Length: 109
Image (cartoon, rainbow, N blue to C red):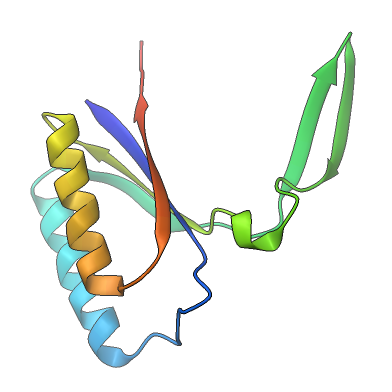
């Protein structure tokens, strides 16, 4: 099972310190070595919104109305269950602290 985990910016986030980078590096290394972590990255908070209606495709600034709704990072993981995806997410937030995110199952053919 693959899950896409996305993080949003937090109003309480402070600048990352050396300890955070070290802990996150170890976590990423462990998850990659175990085959759980397939991809990770940061996302531009802006982006574009694409709307298709009646054959017309419109591209506008976006993708969210408010900047606080933006997705700023992601991880694609492969796990055995939803519970394991939740546990990986719990470990991530134990490292970075407060925040909001989304976990969605990815269906592949």
